[in-house]
Length: 507
Image (cartoon, rainbow, N blue to C red; front, side):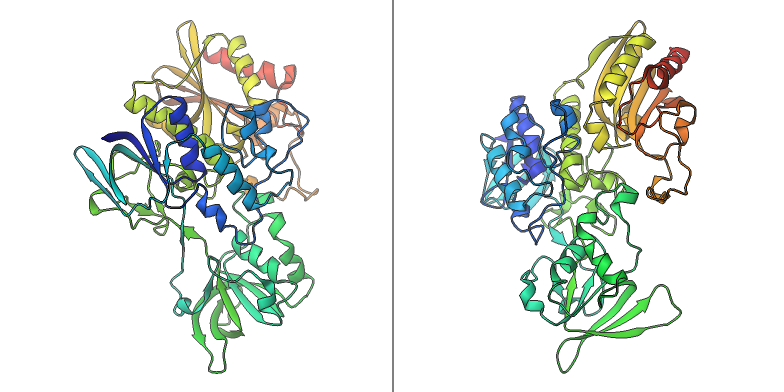
């Protein structure tokens, strides 16, 4: 038997895609190495607190709007399968997510205890070895980034690793600790050791980037940055800017580190520690692929290269879902996280339907008038969670054909440009300004665009709607809607009328 779709991995992305295929009555199977879904989250994060927010109370009863503040739920029509039913904590426990995924997986065609050891491709499709042999026309890899990324530091093998280090802080009493890395896993680890370690240094070659400024949630989150206080308020801890050149054991125990500072002319400083922990991120494990199906890797070989359709750039029929798709928006938007890739996975479902099932992207008909299109856009942008979470990456698309128009939701912007329809189209996104990550939002001395200033909307740095027009793929113009404190873009004279005028000039 040859399956239409074979999904590798029963994490959030694999389950999301499986549920959509199940709803549509498609032929699929999910292979999962663990004995249950969500295996990654049984171990990570190591200190068991998620940094994906879980805001239960929003003041709204609109389920689409509420997903803006619910970063852990998968997309479902079942209100009992929302993560907000499983925890009330703003930063919930990882074990609650494992419990949620187990319930979500019920009724889906998942084969557990099936670790994939080989994926090969031939003219008829794919052969997948996982205890047994499976055949599939298409394979979707949803394994996430399961391999710790170990930097090429001489002596790195002597260090402990984030994935295996003992998380009991009592084991670090009165010790000098070096943590290599400046991401959330590094600061999560440092924060856990503040009460017991004598000295903690967090080191890396790049400046710390704070999520509240960059708007990229993979940068350092406030929930993990208490350590910065202990550094700047002189509590024997420090953030070191530079590179670890070499790690060597000391005869009396512990380690000697050759460190090259980024900020000084000093060539090398020798530093000594009792413990060293690598918190240097994760990467895609491509070891299961035969040469005939091995995807090309990019970004220091950490991710498979993908087309705008989430397909391997080098292996036709091999697709990716979940955090692996962050290769498309690396450190810019949210494909690396559940609250982003749940929508990318739904977009992948539409792409698979278009390509392999003669199933057009779902569309709602509209009259091709400025008033009708304006009303549809305003109604969507005030509740949409997909465009809100996947800013600048996903778009609603309005196509015009004579007196009629069609509204398609949540299409990847790059996919539109790769396969955009002929004629007149409008692309609707939510976006930050181009220099938003250089603006300190707490600096009152920096001039900002006034709220609801329609004339200056194109200079706004905060999140706001943008409508771009194309004819046969060529840009015709763009209209920015003024930013609003409450993110309500529905004021008649500020948002609706200027948009209608822009649309009328093109229609």
